[in-house]
View (cartoon, rainbow, N blue to C red):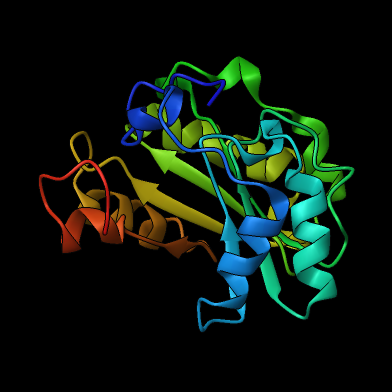
Length: 183
């Protein structure tokens, strides 16, 4: 990953991983028993062949979702791919890396995600949502940083502001507490 968010829970993505050919990844997907594939990070758009992989999976009839950290342009992503853009908030330490031009490429089936650490992050996200009318473009997701913000606090802020925002929790933290990776 090219970002170093303060709250990162996948630090292994900085320099860990295995290389696979495009054909190996497609075969893995074909043998997985699922028809939905999510391409996620670190930052998948930095990976050689990621755009070709998404197109090839779409050509094979897979439903493909790209979850990107928002620092890279999504302009070249196959239009059949659903995009989830995780814009970085001030407390992440990576706010200046957001590629805001991606907002203009959003479609109804896409999503924008904000990981919230504090009231500052929440207010910043609301400002961006308002400035770019993101709720008119696509669905918005908010998730609290597990170690920094109580889920009930974020949920209450959203309810108090009567926002059409989807609240979510990091399921891997609930399913496998204390572990760096899901299974």
